[in-house]
Image 1 (cartoon, rainbow, N blue to C red):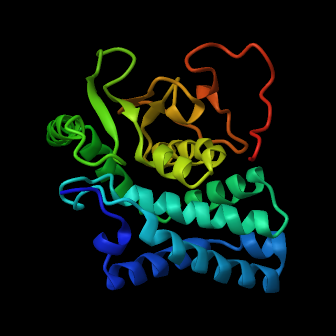
Image 2: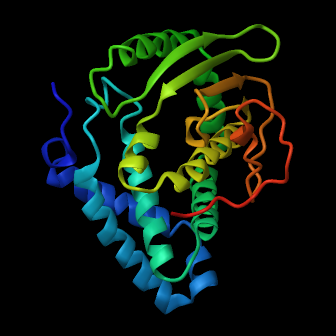
Length: 253
């Protein structure tokens, strides 16, 4: 199957479901009202929904959800891009949008009951999930869809991490590049730390494709500890090398 856009791959029913989910995401807490006031916040949420509805058909087809469990994440990136564009249109900055995305993502994950967090952590490190991940890595290397992820499964070394993935191509990096929004990608990458902080597992990277590195080196530890501060540390910015100068703000285009 050739790569298709959302016009072919996303039904009208699913598009409505994505828009409803996005609206709920935007209302996870009152951060918009605190920052912009009730009236402007309502206008911004409406404009974000309109922008997201325009972006949905531009999301590349990456296979069915059963075939490619990661595919839905590009729709999440499109939603974040819609938020970013509206924030800029209302006089905000890249960092403003990144902060909103960070706090909204945190609010979303914190809704997960603690019992389910434990179940999710156990599943991620289970033998079943490891076997699935290995199969997904092999499938990704077939490069059936140009806009997809490509990665290798990395077995744990028994000391510093339990399992890992090395991504050499990223669907979100590709999508945001096509949309002229490369600068947003590091902020989306940083929200990965929120998930692992929430479920109580260890997670780290020293590189990401978003920073122009040769790969994203995901490493996971079942009994580790993760923090997801705001503002982000952006530890991957040096592509595995220790920082030699103070971190500078990311520049918008």
